[in-house]
Image 1 (cartoon, rainbow, N blue to C red):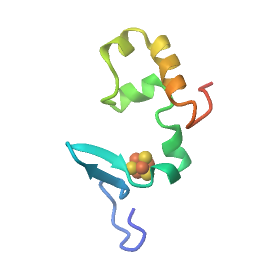
Image 2 (image 1 turned 90 degrees about the vertical axis):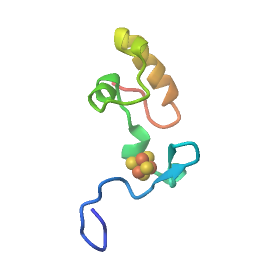
Image 3 (image 1 turned 180 degrees about the horizontal axis):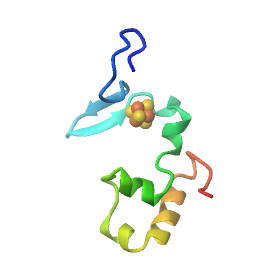
Length: 80
Ligand code: SF4
């Protein structure tokens, strides 16, 4: 929700478009805890239709979760 107008936002106001049709967070180093911890697990990525998921992640979700936890070590504590 926009803090001054009260209107419902359709996307995060800190999401910015980058060259080559990519997107980035303009407050990445100061982003909120929820953002630092996302995604928590593979089922959440599946539910959100995350574009980072690969076919091999779906066939071996245990291995994919270990890889995700490794990638997220500097952002959040391990799942569980
Ligand atoms: S990481 Fe969080 S603050 Fe940054 S663009 Fe995504 S939702 Fe917004």
